[in-house]
Length: 200
Image (cartoon, one colour):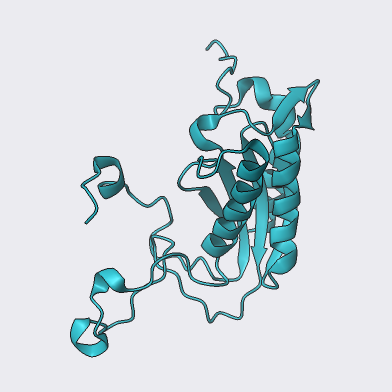
């Protein structure tokens, strides 16, 4: 039996309550390295110079979009310790994901009906959802990175990811500009452990 872990047992979802993350649409995603470690490169004169680990992340981001028919990748940028990207989902509406980003339990499913307790019910992101895309990308990049650095089981990513549902064309354009300008703002980026704070 697993020991009580206050961080794990009291964590809250950062997904938007009630939103179907398998629904067709555009999403702005941010995925951050574990403990914000600067693994993926450096910013020099407003441009990102990728490290060997950064090249792996770049390749896996592109590959993760290519192998999933329901996913379309828009603009993205890989920073020294995070990736920002716009992900399009073109599902037919058959995917349903709960507010936590995990697959919902089928109504009425209990140990009497299935012989399995609710704790044995499959968990994790539903197929063809934003969570499935992010999970697959993170797993693939982690496997390759840890093989390269000879550190099996070492964490590469923060446990979760940040997302924003993009609601209209105007918001889409604002986010595209933000992504394009991100390297130029690295010195002030809140995810940069060495950021320069502006005086009020």
